[in-house]
Length: 640
Ligand SMILES: Nc1ncnc2c1ncn2[C@@H]1O[C@H](COP(=O)(O)OP(=O)(O)OP(=O)(O)O)[C@@H](O)[C@H]1O
Image (cartoon, rainbow, N blue to C red; front, side, top):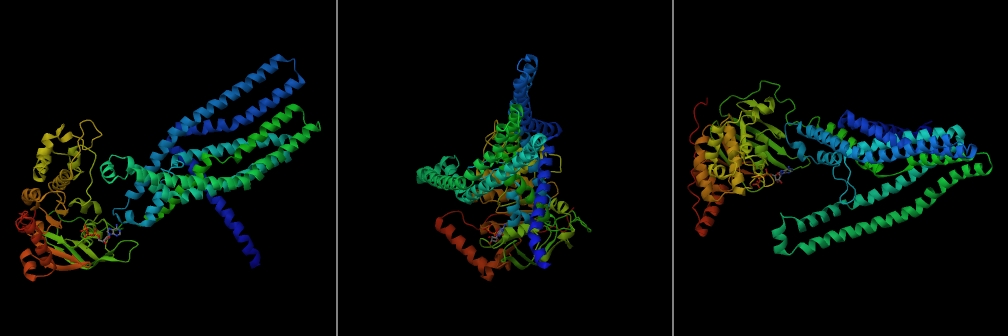
């Protein structure tokens, strides 16, 4: 009994897999609705017309031949049948031409809908942990097949959804043709269907193998295309010329392409020999032989024989493996499977799943923040970037966080903003655990200049007011932020003032230097402070500025920073020396903490790093590192 069950299991599994694939195919075809009703209806109608036209052509051809043989003098009947055949052929050609245009428009709209669906999915969690999760990235790549295989075919979710409609309607057409055939001969109808399915299965394996070969080359092709881009792009032009990289980069591109073409050609030849010869030639010939034999034996009148032939070819159309089959197999179905897996993965991706359910919003003033034994490891990594970290940021204080590259300073800011949740320990704001505060409420209290701040290709004003998107933009606040961040000259000189687009591609658009972009990011953060943010996080806020510009900038923003607690991260120790407290991060925890004077007196790592930097400045005869006036002042007693 068990042996029988064991034998049946693979069959049951493959039947279940087929049923699941059919469900996915139905979902794929149904997603054509996202192109809008009229366009979706057009996709179905045009493709149905394409699929049924071989049946109609076969029918009218058979009738015409029969009429020619039986009533050659009936010119009226012959004319009507000829006209019907011509109209059918014309309709068939028109449907072919229309199909391309309809597919293009529908696929674009479906792609837009699909992209928004993925953006909604990825944007739903309030944190960013899932963005770094390799499993999520892999599913996202699979779910968004917008590029296809590099340098080979280009398919998208939209083209594969329309492709599924093409395949479904083609199957309907083939079944209609088989039904017509069955009216005359059931065996022939069955033989034609079997031949069609056999050819499809055999050539399907051929396509799969070819796809596997091309996929195997994908990483090399991607690299080669990157080199071709390096050789010909404006962003790389200077280095390419100075280093003389052009010929080398193009040579790499050619090498990979030649190797790939050679491999694919060999696979295709081998497969064609093995499969093509046997299946593509023998099966149709064998099936057609039946009809020919029947005709030769006078059992089929010529008209019916012509109809048989037409129907036979119509049935065989379902055996075709073309771009649509390819799209569905390698883009549409994998994308839908990946969307399902992505939904499951992201269902519990919120760093604080219960965020905002409890008492909630922090008080209005500068917050008191405590990190209590906080540990953190990135997903997929065993290394604890933070390990038992205890730290308090008092209301209105300026705390500087220093440490070597990779010490975990930026990770600290991600935890502080609730983008990531601690693996162990907890963070509290005014005594309330961060997981009990709604992410949106907490983030309205926080303003940041991140190391990798965003260059928005938007007007200058939007680049600043995005710091407080919930507030009506005010010119007064804009001008103040510009003054404090030192961008007022930039705004005055810009061709359209605040409305100047910060991108070259737009009319009157301008491009900014690294330092100017950094000032814009600062203006954005200060604009947020003037709209209620009470924790200002500055992660290397002046990395692109020279030391004089930095000095001048900090003297300007010192006053503004008085309204908020400030967390300042910088490798320039001269920048941080006037902070209320300097915290040195090492091995995932606070190694040293105190004022500049206290830490220098301690003679530990901070003192060593500061002395090293000071010596370098002295040797370079550059500005001494001692006097940057970043002095937000003592913590106020109470905050309105
Ligand atoms: N998304 C991530 N996934 C996995 N590991 C990460 C990720 N981001 C950072 N890390 C690792 O965490 C450690 C701390 O990185 P972090 O960026 O917080 O350091 P940092 O002190 O800000 O460094 P730097 O001074 O260079 O900016 C590094 O070892 C880094 O490789």
